[in-house]
Image (cartoon, rainbow, N blue to C red; front, top):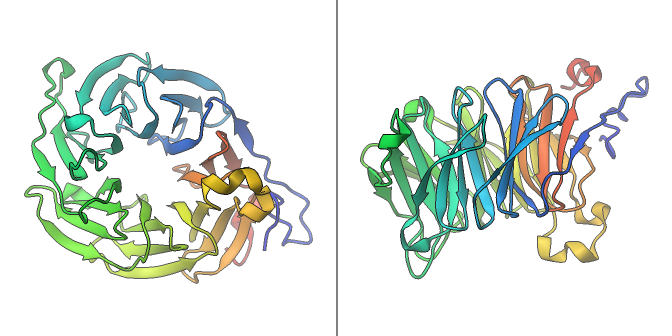
Length: 345
């Protein structure tokens, strides 16, 4: 097992360290992280009502997207890194010019429902949003057509989907391969698959026993990984939706990511946020844990955060990753050469 962020302490002949870049640009807990396609940009959002843009190589802060009046829970960036979308507890979805930081369009969620998830489809022609349960209104997935010219953009959805258990939140939504399906997870402990054209449910996954907090697709869309409060993370086939692997932990899991380069997955979570003030980082189990994707064994852990990890993202080249936590910090971790040459990896 690796310890602290001496990732290579398991290797007696190595004296290298993982030296992370610590990014401080938010005043409240980090909620989501996203690299752009090329990996040169890293986007973060937080419960402090803003999204922030960073150079991923140096950690330089490039700018902040100001305009929301509530915590920003989610974001996504399009293929060409020209358009950013954010979703907030202020019941709005905002589209931004990535380069200038200028807000281009605002979609108001019906019934003032907080927005929990946003995601561009492959090709960026469609946008999915998910709102929480609010004022007896069911959690709802909505699809919007993205106009070529945002001057012609409409805030009328082309499809609305409900179906998670009554009174439970939808936590995250992603597009499946070729935009055929939408995959959602929620507090009802299920992962549900929806036909993206009709909105009909085509599959429901009930392998988890507690709320499923997040799902993340692999870079090639062949599989996706779940993060659950039942202390497990599961890998599923994106075509058949059958479970492939299970990674067991001794703590609730808030985020997970699949490496695009190695047969590894990352898991992050920790003790409940309400208990953080009475717990040290070691006791709270706030480290990022590395598991072998095939063998399901834990092969390392990386410490550094002082609160539960809420977000994880691999760089597209697989040579680094970013983590964001309840402590309000984003950390960019660069793997040393030993990581790629270790026989177990």
